[in-house]
Image (tube, rainbow, N blue to C red; front, side, top):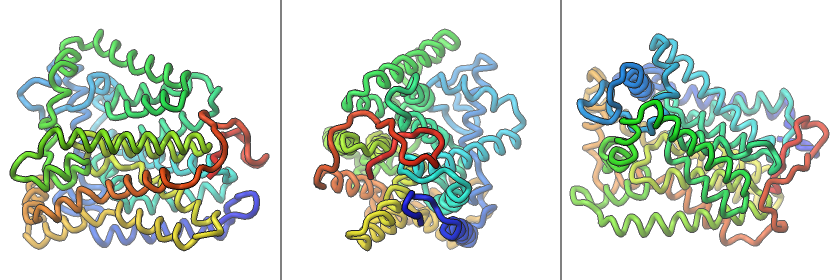
Length: 439
């Protein structure tokens, strides 16, 4: 893929692009891009309607979190997010759909580009083309497919955080994107303990100040909604969806499906989350000290998917940069190359859209492709799944999480202590002086 200065050759850029086109073509065959009922990649954008609805409620001085339930479902984000989404409400729906979709695709490409740059690859046209191919292949991942399908904001938030936290430790206001992302989607708060544990004090301070600013601003603009959210709605998981849904791919989702129709013990869930988070942060700290900041950031992003009581499959977009790291290891490592290649393939397979493909096949089998919406059809298909199958679907990304964390914790330490990204540049070809991971 690269020569001695880690440049991507034109040949490998073309291979990556062709592989991406082939992957998208396969997806279009498995689930057509306009498949009914609202099931194709370009046939839903349902969460965008919730964003717009929340913004319209702010504009019309209506309550965000109190009944009656608005069209499309509850607004489940912090109140600051509804303010951020106001521009989307001022656009025609079709324009808003196009804007969010395009920005998300660009954000995916930017994350993969940034990941490659941090790993030391030359920022040129060949890398740009290769990252287009990687982005097309990433659309095979259920997390990426689901984010684009729903017009979710996961890819945008991930791109912001990856760009910011891979900057030099002396970069101005580094960490602010963590606070902003937390104001929009609360799960991003998991990056704050990471910054503290790795003694990135300035970044932690920037993140804290920005997060507080988003809450204060929202409180001034929509005080009643802010009070309702922080005192009541933030604790109500039922607003988000049923925890037994097989695409709730958190630890709680696995437990809920194994115990269904009963409820799993809350103490067990909290214990498992605490242990899993401790292991994850331990792995992130170890990776950061080995000057592997991208790996550390990805692990923390995965913690944000593992820990909540409900985390939809589309939250796991952090698998995309993880695959870049694994592909890099496969190419750069002379020893155990077959093992790295197998790990890359296994992660791609476990994170792929196999689960939702099965659901769509069941929808076709049940003759529900003419249903008025995807939710009734999906519910009917999911109801055909035994509990143990649902648990496997829930648990596939969790297996990736625990495998990555375990591999990092048990490997021998590489490199000396380095609690902040290095400011050195790998090559004069890179232009911008990026911190480079010692992967």
